Image 1: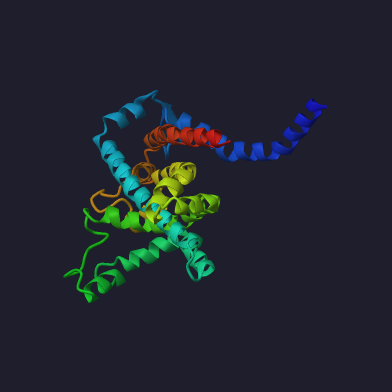
Image 2: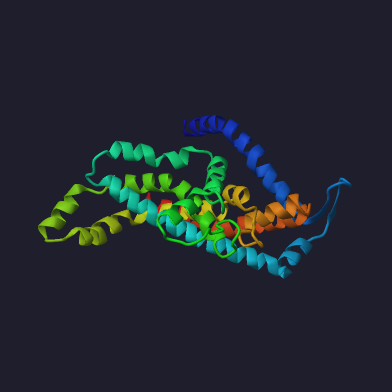
Amino acid sequence: MIQKKNFQAIYFLLPAMILLTILYAYPMFLLLVQSFQKVELFGDQSKFVAFDNYIRLLKDKGIYHNLRITLLYSFVTIAIKMLGGLMIALLINSDIYGKKLARFIMLIPWAIPQVAVSIIWKWIYDTRYGYLNYFLDAVNWVQGNIAWLADKDVTLYAVSIVDAWMGWPLITMMILAGLEAIPKSLYEAGRLDGANTWKQFWHITLPELAPVLTITFTLVSIWTFNSFNVIFVMTQGGPLRSTETLMMRVYNEAFKKFDFGMSSALSVLIILFMLAFISLYIRQLTKEE
């Protein structure tokens, strides 16, 4: 009887397993095979080169520049996402007027397609006609226009803010769910013991939110490390490669240099690098269960 039930479960899962194999497993296999080849785009031939693509990657100093940019971009974006999401979640979870409206407004950045958001923010950041420079000049915060997307020392942080702005809603909802799960009795006991708002946050809210924050941080790290749409639309890796992350380098190798072997090898290395974050996420989920 147990074996029959197991077979029934397999039958139900079989269509999804076939679909996932076609959409993910087979392309991943081709990617791995292609990483050991030199692909001739126009000759329709591929030559096996063993680990030559990986060796070229490790010897390329530009890859380490891309890795540094990716880590810096991820660090800044994740920090803004997590801190902003936590603050918004705490605000919405408090006794404020218009909580339902605030939740609705908060979802707007998440509901708009990333490409559309990137184009809008590109207009906002425009050096001569952008609204941001106009506003900063109107309140006398800066003198002269700032080249948000043309200054290599500023562009990375400007794009990080856009990425974080789009990520706030989902992070806020995840943290908000964790906040609502905290028993109110803990805060009542804390107030009876004389704990002020800060002590309640530090000794009750943060410890109770720790599992949610860990899972959220792991997921956000994976998504941000693989971020591509925002950078591609707003800067395409410029200026002077100041925003050329590893994902942008994969795109440039494949569709600008037509070096699909190198692009595949870099993709494989990124996948291996991200497995560390995925294993962390699975370990945390198992721990929670």
